[in-house]
Image 1 (cartoon, rainbow, N blue to C red):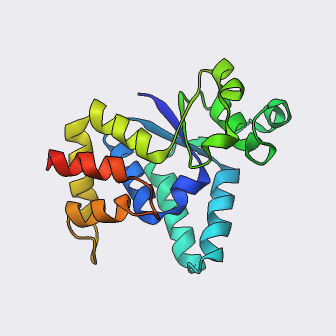
Image 2 (cartoon, rainbow, N blue to C red):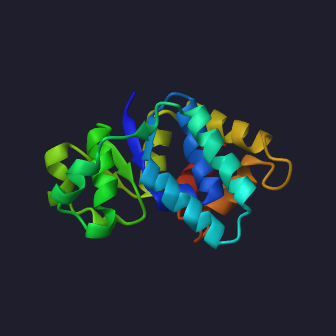
Length: 183
């Protein structure tokens, strides 16, 4: 199973985060993150108005559901990374976690010359999800059905979820379009 490092920006959006982790639950990939990513996520969720107890619950559930996702011991590598300085901690953790893929909205912060030597490919969330759909179509569609079945409010259907993911706030129009064809 491929290890995939998830940047804060893709974990911040609740439906996108839930979609990524629902697919990971199928065994299609193994998600990775660091304490720094979780601290950033916590800070950003609180900044946008999430309640502290809801944030704590979300982070706890992520760590309980994926106990092997947390990458540690990467701090000494941060200074040697050559990508954008504000995201060097992300690449260092991806390297130590032996991730083959890093999923982020900040593609420009990870130029190929900074990631290639480590065998890490950087993907935007739409491209990554499209790749998962191509590799594991049945698992992805089942993950979306399971995801929406857990919601007590909208989106209660896969179509409604795909409408959200296609929007500018979540940035997955290609994935949503392709999933609609699978339905």
